[in-house]
Amino acid sequence: MFRPCTTSLRRIRPCHARQLTTQPMPSSSTKPQAPPHRPLPYGSTVTPSTAPSSQHPHMSGYSVKWRLLTFAAGAVVGGLTFALALYNDADETADTDMTREYEETREEVLHRGSLIEAARSDPGLFVWGLGGVEETAATRFFRGKVLRAVALGREQGAAVDEKGNLLQWHVEGSGKASLSRPGRSKVSAPVVTLSGKDLVQVACTGDRVVAVARNGSLYSLQKPAADKGNDGATVKAHTDVRVKAPALWRFESVASIAAGAQHVVAVTTKGRVFTMPLTETANSAGQLGTGVAEERTEVGTWRLVKDLGTDTAAEAACGDSHTLIRTTSGRVFGFGANIFGQLGLDPTNPTFPHPTEITTLRLPSAQSHPATCTQIAAGGNTTLFVLDAPDSTDVLACGSGLNGQLGNGSYTHVTGGPVRVKNVSGLREYDEATKQVKPIRVREIAVSPTGTHCAAVLDNVVDEPTRSGLWWLPWSSPATTTPARYGHDLLLWGGNRAGQLARSDNKKAGSPIPIPVRQLTFGDGEARWKGRFQLAPVGLVAVRSEGGKIRRVRGEGKVVLGDEVTGIFMTQA
Image (cartoon, rainbow, N blue to C red):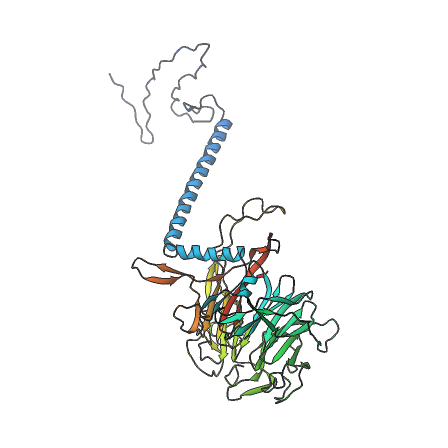
């Protein structure tokens, strides 16, 4: 017989059946188990004391605290395992993306990195032009050395070594430049012509070399004489000629110099500017800034340049017959010849004997922000300006552009005002360190002495190799885990008659172009130039002493331009 369950409108009373369980008898070796759970009477409320205990089959007999600790430990181990799996997956994905991105350029990246490492392990002065990459007595002499400064004139060269000594060499024969092919002309081996003066800068002008010491002293030396021997030309050392300093104030000294074809400009630590003629016709176009253009002038006397307003000068640049002064506030003043528009002023006025502010400098890529001039360079009848704004950097050029040295794609004799140089203006890049897009600044600009070709070094993000070992210890060698792959981009433009742009077709370039570093053969069998040359960023450079010992100093790559010659060298950072 079945007993029916009684029901009501609000609740149902369940029927309970007695649970039959069989429990083994406890023994002395086993722990007694809890009695079976009986159902609660109808209408009872479940409380913590009356709640049934559900023991885990593998956790019986352990306290709640121990269970929580075990659970927490398992969660930590699981989380770490999951995170490690995600990291490995992301690393593999990044490696795959990197491989895909650089699959076609892996060879050029490796070759470019090897060039940077080679520049650091085997520094020196390397040049190309006049038909190819040249190795002369001058370049062989500087192997394994870092230099403070290098100047390449039309028929001579000068360098300041690591100790501040002046070395000079010259070219004899048909070569036009300061470093040329040994078969066509003889290049003398450099010799020390001025020592113990702690020189920091040097400039070549005409047949003279002008140098400035760290204490502000000026020295002017004639083009070195040569003795002909069996091994070619050698330079005779001669006594130094110290230039009489201009009328300086107390605690004022010469900070930097610039040289034109016939005159020298000195900028002092107080921001004043002095000019000195080296020949009687050195002020024929008013390039001395005295306010008058003279057919004949007194040689070897300093003139103070006035009319700069309340600004102080920061640097000077000289062409053949024109002078530019950049102030600390970013303004630029020019005076001298303007036949080709090299001052950036109205070319209908051929000369400006008074210092005149160049108000035509504008930044097209950042019209909403004010731009200031941060660098100037000049040579021949060509001038370059670097304008910086908070969100952009542009390079402007003016003057003669017959060889394409204006960089705007045209080949013109005269410019009516500064024009924007392509491929180096308005550049931007993503900085992984700051996670932002920022403008690519210009690290250095240069114009050859004849103004036929120009160079620009970009201040792009460089490769920072990670260091390993106990590099923080003073006696430990700073080893690196990976070699440097990226440096500062070097771009050239202008004339290429002698191969100074390192182009295989010897064509001139109307806009900046990178230097190819390697000729690669692709699947179609055609050989093309791939990759670009980059200067070594700041890093440790291996310097070889006379005894053969190697020591490491901090250095970086620099570019120097001569007449139809381009050179690079390592300087102390």
